[in-house]
Amino acid sequence: MLEESQEPLSSTYDLVMADLDGVVYVGPAAVPGAPEHLAEARRRGVHVAFVTNNASRTPRMVAEHLCELGVAAEASDVVTSAQAAAHLLAGRLEPGAPVLLLGGAGLEEALLDEGLTPVLDAADGPAAVVTGYGPDVTWRRLMTGAMLIRDGLPWVASNTDLTFPTAEGVAPGHGVQVRMLSDFSGVTPEVAGKPARPLLDETVRRVGGDRPLMVGDRLDTDIEGARVAGVDSLLVLTGVTGLAELVAAPPRLRPRFLAADLGGLFTAHPVPHVAAGSTTAELGGWRAEVRGGVLAVDGAGDPDDWWRAVAYAAWGHLDETGEVCDTSGVEPPTPVGPPAVGGTVTA
Image (cartoon, rainbow, N blue to C red; front, top):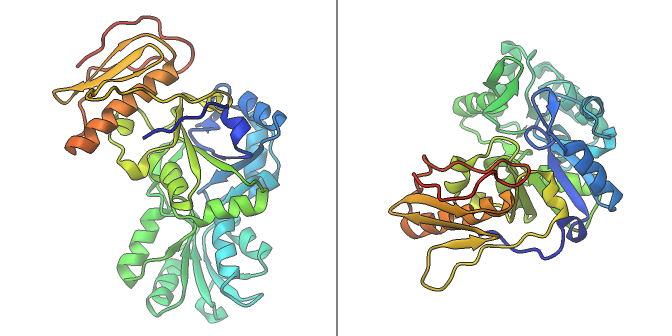
């Protein structure tokens, strides 16, 4: 369940690890308010790191893109799964060791920065294989990597994301390649990116901070990754997670805190009250309950409190019955500002 914070999160945590797509930007534009919220976090003395599973772009490329969107960023603020993968390999291999590169510029630069030697062919005697999204990786190189992995060469994958967004729509991600290599070789790679732990550990190592908070929009990478790493998390609702995904979340995918957007960094986080013997979650003027498997919400108040009450009621029902409640007739309040009307909303 959600947990309470009587103080603003910016007073409790000294490092915000912000996912990018769905938190800082969506498609070609910044999330409304995100540049201002991140600037305010820094003004309050909080370190801000931009954390991404995307291994194809270098930190400099990512920082330049963020600056174009009005988000102040330097390359040192960006931590990628490519960097986490390269750091894993550097801890296992001799300095300068050759590594078969099946990925893009971001992965190549990360290997070089760790003192390793990217190579493109088995004839170069690679000591390991590293993979990441790279649209120009040829089938011949993939075949080479697959056979080396099958024959026992260590393999680190930057991430296992099955999809990623493009200007043309959702496209196959690096996880599709990982499945293919794994199916052929019978080997499961060591994974650097979320929800595995290395990327968040790498972020703390590079950016600093004693009390990190992961901020994400995706339950199965950002929030699960935070739990795996033993880090608290804030789920924001500016990306892929909506009502249907939230109410279906099992315990391992549930955040510690929940807010409509990054403004949740600067507020207290109350938790709903559930009276003994009751299944109704009440918070800030909202009442949420699952009746006969159907979610019902009534009242009026702050949108963040609406989401928290709904999460409490839905998760309580899920934990008790093993069934996801029906939300087909429920309309969430607008993410910004108070709801236009109160009243009962049922399926």
